[in-house]
Amino acid sequence: MEAVTSINKSFLAAIAVVLAVAALPAGCAAHFQTFAPAPSPTSDGTTIDQGIAYVLMLVALVLTYIIH
Image (cartoon, rainbow, N blue to C red; front, side, top):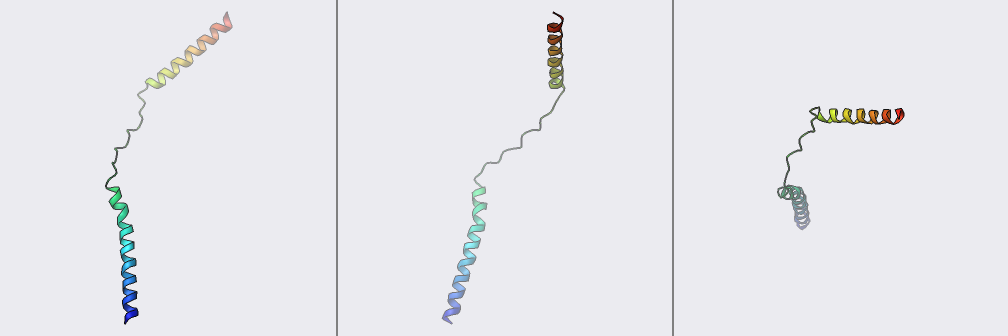
């Protein structure tokens, strides 16, 4: 009967360790601050227009350099 009690105590200790390890991340996660996701980048066309303007200015600069 003594062997059965020893096995039961070992089994209960193993169950307690498994439950403690399973509960540990849940307890730690409660202390972390969660942030809202960042808004997705949107293009309202001004960036594209500015890029086209820079390309056209570069073309004008090259043409001016070639002509003179």
